Length: 253
Image 1: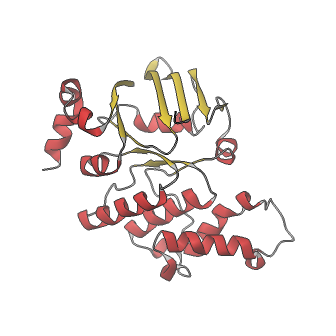
Image 2 (image 1 turned 45 degrees about the vertical axis):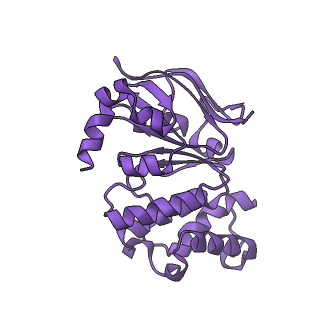
């Protein structure tokens, strides 16, 4: 039986008197590519913030690879093997592309806050950062400032930073948002490569991307999961089509 990478148990989140997440329970298997879809305002990004520790839970429990991470701070969760990207590109624009990725590998290699290490001489960190750059297709762009990359390249860089620390559970929030079709195709190929051997959880509105990438899809509507199944079953689910998927597919055409 495949191990559970991430277990969400009856999650609730309210802001004041307003409930946003209302009893979400979900097990995501190790090595699975799992997409979370739903209409705007369904609570998808809030759910990501809860899992990654950015927001505290109102109630419920979260386990990462069997370990309870409920109430842990984001950096503590990250060090236990979960890393995420954001809807809005989150990079260091004045650092080079290489320096951005190298920042992501340092802690995983045991380098802590230090004033006496010359980071340029850390052979293992530099080699690992270069390997990540090659994997995400930015090897030739390593020495330019990240802020001058194209939008699609910046999104690829953020994915590189997400995997740089060696996390085996990665969360991508709207990884293809704002991209052209050709850029989206390139991003999908990249996500397939970097998710090999890892557990992938993503929020995505582009149904073409979702059905191309996901092994399983969960549909979140008004803070509740109304279905969680294989892509073919989700596509034919009447309740899902009525609540969201019909409109989303129409919007693709």
